[in-house]
Length: 143
Image (cartoon, rainbow, N blue to C red; front, top):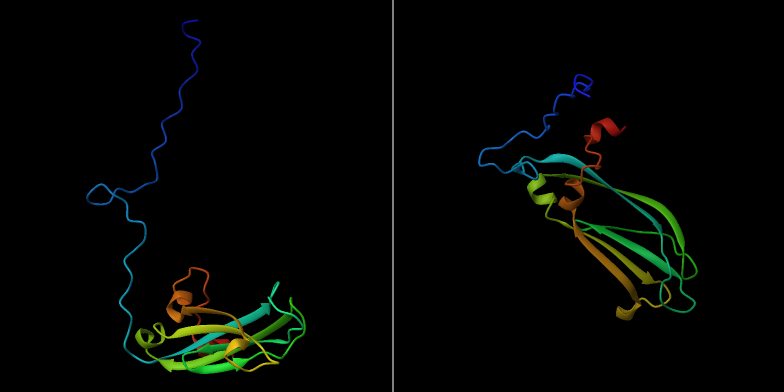
């Protein structure tokens, strides 16, 4: 029927802001890291191990960050619950600290030989800092 048409809604304009060149950037350019020393604290929480390979294991986790090493208490079994938190404090420039490796090594405490390594994980400290959910509070505000 003519004249019974419903009014049309205005077209929605997309919320995308065009960037020069017609392409959107996926992420902002990374900021240059400072060479000025600052206080940093890296917190590592070791929760549990699952289905570790071996018989009669007494695993321990060794956490090493930029040369500082801490160990969990020894547990029993192939799926141990550790639930331990370690704090590593540093006074370094971000450029130096973020290139430092973080190692998580699971060892069988019964045999402290080279074959006692059950598993190992390595990553750079800067990878943690780059995550969006990372807490970036200065050390002085933590206490």
